[in-house]
Amino acid sequence: MRTTRLPFKLAATTALAMLAGTAAFAESHGMAKKGGELTVAIETDVRGFDTVKGGVLGQTGEIVMRSMQEPLLDYNPDTGEFEPLLATEWSVDDSQTVWTLKLREGVKFHDGSDFDAEDVAAHYNRILDPEMKSASRSFIASIEKVVAVDPLTVEFHLAHPWMALLPYLATTSMSGPIPAKEAVEADTQNRSPVGTGPFKFVEWASGDRIIVERNPDYWNADEINLDKITFRILPDTQTRFASLRSGEVDVMWTDRGPSIVEAQKDDKLVTLTTVGAGAAINLLNGRKEPLSNANLRKALAHAWNQDALVKISWQNTRPAVTHPLGPIKDCGDANYREFNIEKAKEYLEAYKAETGATEIPTLTMIHTTTPRGRELGEIYQQTAKAAGINIELAPVDQSTLVARTFKGEFDITGWRIADGADMGPQLFAYVTPGSSYNLTGFDNPELAELAKKMRVATSMEDRLNMQCEMVSMMNDDGGVLYRGGGQYYAFTTPRVKGVPAPYRGAVDVTRAWIDEQS
Image (cartoon, rainbow, N blue to C red):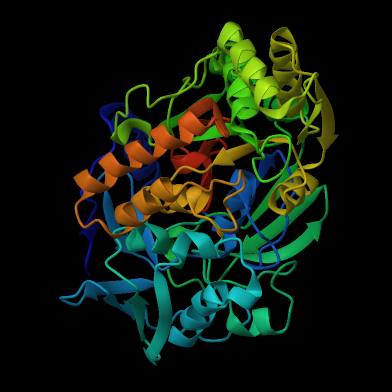
């Protein structure tokens, strides 16, 4: 068995939180009871589980995905090490461009077929195929191809040394978990996923629930305790919270400040929390008029009040941030354009002088129909109005927001930079012309060149320093506005054991068990 240590560790606050969660998990696992059912309350439905058709998972989708599908590696946020999962060994050649992974023998998919190197190669090569238009391709484009050497050996051929390979082989977002090749070819993976995970797909009632049941043939079956998990889709935060308190659900994911504060005060509930990277953001669409004008973007940047949103919406349960790197790197103020109405008005005058406009155009902001989404839109509408900018609000469901954002059908939209062990691939994708994730239309040759240098850096110190430089240039542009950093929460009832703190914001209930005596 081989483990690989990342060349950085999580900050002390994160490490301590995770250590406590892991210690509790280890202790409870030794006392675990077999059997029982668990109900998990999530906020939104899942778009799908196929890496092409499903697009992006989001945090709630990732919670469900973890129960059914697995990536090649596991990442231990306590130690900063990668550990075996579907792959048991990994090594790299002297050029650092060919990685060889040995796969676990005897693993079966839920349909009874063998897991092997062909499944791995088919999965990654499909994402890398430009014709597939996978939303994940931009993140892993440093991989040129994946080759099945023999049934239990796979090679990843890189275009250049890439320090983010192992983090992306361990991700449980869309590109990491390996599906059965046959299910993908049969075009059933999106709605009836087949993986190697500890639970098998049973039922999906759109907008209501997703049900999975214990996989009796799981390769690590001794660690699995529950017979069944039901993921209840409850968009209303108060409904989720009331369902947890009443015992109708056992686990609740939430990022709503009032519910978090109230739940933390309830001694009948267990709080799970971690500090990480990533951030909630607003995107300004610089790919089309009128926000293709830099002065108008900068005016909107100064008209955005992150501190107010953190206080009102998050109730200070998340920090205000100037970059998405989290506690692993302090980028300082990183040229972030702070809330300043007078500066916003100055940039509006510059916009008028440059364009000859006599009025500021009305802009449209799309946001989710959730309470959080409505609050976000109303806060920005009010602060922008104070600067002289009118914003019309267009509430849409989560799937529509994602689709419209990728199509560029927005002026302003709420979005999220996902947490990760290495934020480099996301930053690269967000600023590189032609990337499917260049959602704001960055077209700065200097920034694009810096992104390329960051991607091939072989020192983590250099890599992180360049990521800070990239963020400073992004902030100066004004197209990405932060609305709270990476702090994540989940809550359980006392009878639920074995749930670790929500690393990257996704609750992992796969090793949970029920103690009816608690």
